[in-house]
Length: 250
Image (cartoon, rainbow, N blue to C red; front, side, top):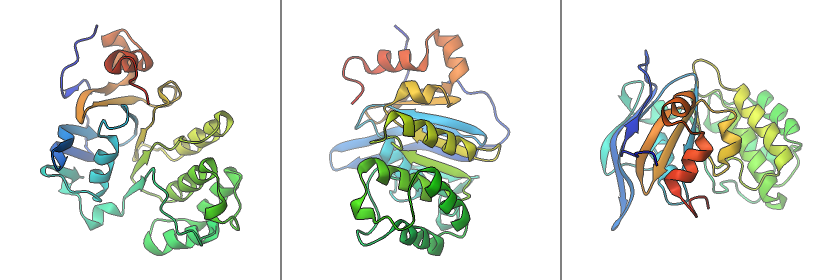
């Protein structure tokens, strides 16, 4: 068994931190959703945020983008507390549907174009086509898989510096996952940080370079994938099985 220490990190020193969480805690009544988590996200990296339902992944993402405020601790973007300005450079894709039922895919694009200066309609229409969607499709008629594709298309059409994708592969068949993963990876350059949460650990291990393991609201292990393999002698999939045990993947 590996020795799992709360808050362990095995990342190397970097020149510049893009998004930094310092001891953040979030409670809802008597329930602690996130418990004193500290982590630093760096540009040029693709992170897999792993853990079963209820481990705190979604709450952390919502705090990073400013939708939820921590009870204690701080979140900094380029050294400044997350605010309205930083939200312009952080793109968040939630698991919940967030479009009005009357909208078409074209309406969704116009909605984003009104709200985000970095949104590219040209890029959005290209991504719709790549996802095998058309602008005239109504959101209320979309299957869960098609809705997931739409959310990815409109999120990745922004030219953000940080992308937070919460369970982007939910409800999507095996063949479509490859298209989605390739599309997402294309957006990652040396100045972009990408965080993907998912239960499909084996698929993420192929494309990410860093892994974040959350359990019961706490950060239990974080590091670059190759360093994890060398230091722990296990793949990310094996570490996932070991950390969460039977029933860890929901």
